Image (tube, rainbow, N blue to C red; front, side, top):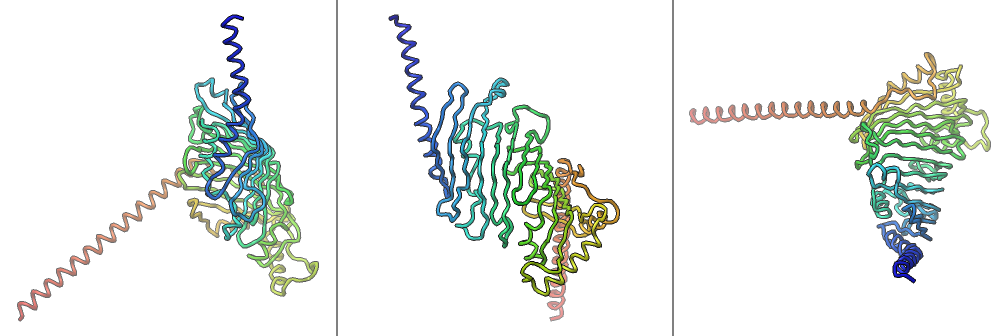
Length: 399
């Protein structure tokens, strides 16, 4: 046998051995990486290597909270595919893509730390970078499920999304689009039990601690009876039937946001003369009666809906709205023109930029007023001191 043939066979054997052993070493690396993540820990059952594609698959990934009371893991992904994005490689960019199949996210909200599970303590960006040590340019999730337990404070209201699909493109700006929001984001999902659907579309700039964005979000035909825990607690009423749809546009730049929510109720009924069990109080009986009367007055009878538009402006920590635009919106829907489930297309990213500039302008004016007030105070202090010195000299002269 020729020496060159022996070398070729040896290389082939080495590649086969490396291919057989590589998944073992990668599995150990991944599990060691995920074993200690602060208050969370993770584990992977198996890893499969695809050398030709430049990819590997993680199977049965679980991340759970240590010493938590939640039975379900915070994150479970039966299959995750991490690979090189060949399309971008041909453009001279070495970036990767992540695809998750049937992922499950289980959030729980509670003042009790052990009963809370939100994942906010984890640096998810670092975890993904460690799992795939090249820049991520595309992320996708298919047929996922998201559960939010006790999503509204002080009530037992839960919220879930199923058949959740999402895709984020051009995260690393490989396409070099001449825009401030180069990354398109889309997501859809069903809302089981509530009878509705969710749609989300946005342009985003993700390479910031607090991303810039301009989004359109809609929830369609959610059942009002699912909000009865909230309605009883905060309004002393409950719903007998009806649906609510919510349409929202929002833009944010450097933490300053501007936008609106537009809730539209359909076929809403609050008051019923006799309820099953008849366990409501006298106060709630008359509150529901008055609420139903108000609904009839403020309802657009042609569309059988009560709706308004809630403008929002401010920051992530401090978002403000005014009551009069909301009241005017209710009256407009009832007596002028009914709102629709369509987006108004009145919010742009430029509005968020202008909002930030207006905020800076307001702060400059405030600082200017503060400086003027301080100068006025110092002037008054100097005048007072002159008067005191003058009075002292006069007393000294008289003595």
